[in-house]
Length: 149
Image (cartoon, rainbow, N blue to C red; front, side, top):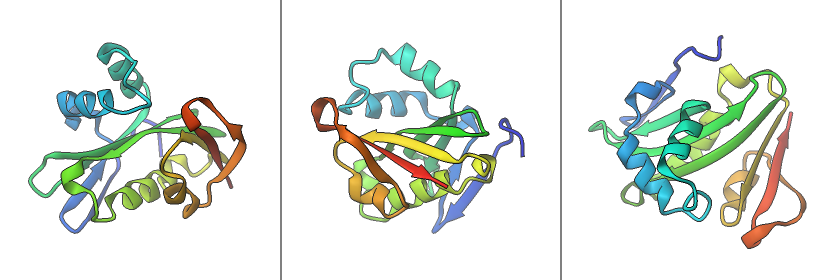
């Protein structure tokens, strides 16, 4: 599987898709602009970072952008999971678990032996997929986590 190949997964009427042309730029930038981790990044720089990553759009049964996540990766040894969110209206339906599970198990990333991320509030979500905390606490209480496989 090549890094540019588009992948798609479906569950309960929802879809996760890696086709960047389907991403709702306005919705994603609005949601990420309100997060502690991306609020200080300009919309232009944030969008460029998305376009240069493996992006996972999560869509509701009516086609709305319901969530998002991305992997910054070399597709061989390393990936950095970032910008994972579910719109508030869709939370409580295990969609966060599903998008993380999908990202970690994406066949395009099968060769990747280390996935890392930084979070200050979602440790339990990532622990269930085998991520462990490494190092001490960073800025604003963030902890770096990794999954070695």
